[in-house]
Length: 183
Image (cartoon, rainbow, N blue to C red):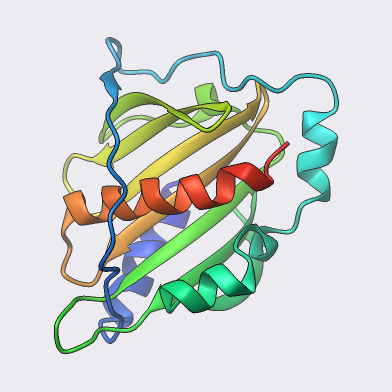
């Protein structure tokens, strides 16, 4: 997890030429009472894990959604226990850029997320239980969508201007775009 986050942060710093999204998706959450995320990771049972394993990470955002939002995929990658895809938006004269990531974790549920260094908030994204993880000393925000108790999809965001609140807005916005594709 830490290696993936470090990669995202380094990537974001290197991609200072990316642009921010102008729309936001409102949402509310409930603070988690403990330092650990909830143990119930999703509402899907049965073959949700097998169906998730069949998904490709870069297919989680349709080309029309990518075009509408002005993001470009860097292609699929694997590592750190996840199958991943990243999308970037270049900086414009009026807005910072950002990086969005989707990490499919076929054998790690919400409860497997290491919450050290994050402020955790319970959420629902569509029909799935989710947790927002906002870095307490950083600029990365992750929306962790539970698919089964032992599988999840992490939607990660950070901006070129290190605005954590904007990163959380983006992570939630893209989580809501990705969630309908999940079993």
